[in-house]
Image (cartoon, rainbow, N blue to C red; front, side, top):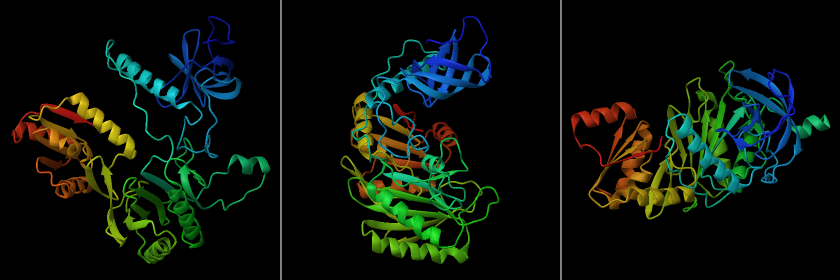
Length: 411
């Protein structure tokens, strides 16, 4: 909470300050104070003493860019990934995980107090993920025409890859710049190997990536989904609607299947919209069944390319056990599961309640949820497709199921 700025003076844009970071704001920025004025500092950690330049001054707060760490935080750790700091995928990999959990809990408390006006709500300790790395079962990678130059390239003044083609993750804060990813510790090493193979093939294909600037080009996204317990792997290639380029996708899938026998299905999603989203208006199944299966506890789930499923499989199992314990089901409850996705929570609690009604806007996810009921021989779950606010209102008004005893909300 210290500052080199004199007392009772106005902080100005462009001014350099020495700041002690005392907490983390929601979103991961460090928080410091100058004579009661809150200063948000990018890329800083609680406990650090930093030199920072004010880049924005607003009523009640300021924003600053960190220039130099003068004293390191006792909670700082060495980041595992070589792309840390440039990639937008991980923001706090250099902060001890137990400290991350503590600050997440603190952010919930502060949100309830400052936004909700709830001063005395007990917030329990955040549950840790069973795995710190390689825990994700889904990764979305983006193609782009404007590859971000890495720090190493800039410092060596030597460009090592083409600048007009990239496949990786977005640079932090830049929707129009893609950082080529050569390692990632969020999903499995297999996912990164598939990424590199697809990047090499697509880069040699002579077909340009899609651009949101002029809405031309073909390659848009690569999505890899994995069943952490089943070992099944899906490759989802999302492109623009250019039929003359579809044979390239088919050839790529053939070569992927030869190179990676672990891949059990591959789909081609065709996105005709201008928005750069990793879903399609039309889907072509090019290898296998078009879905993968994953197990959560005693339930088996079928997952399609565009349906939602908790991305941390083992973390989801822990979360769902916690939901059941806190709800303290007695067996007679009617439960509404809002934003139910593929029905993972609904099916997990089905044996403990009278009935579950799930609400979900993504039709493919609702179809998955219904198939998952059949797959697990569950007969007390129903699923409603549509906007949750409208569908929930209609359900209550119509009185089809009655008022719920418990509502689960996981938007």
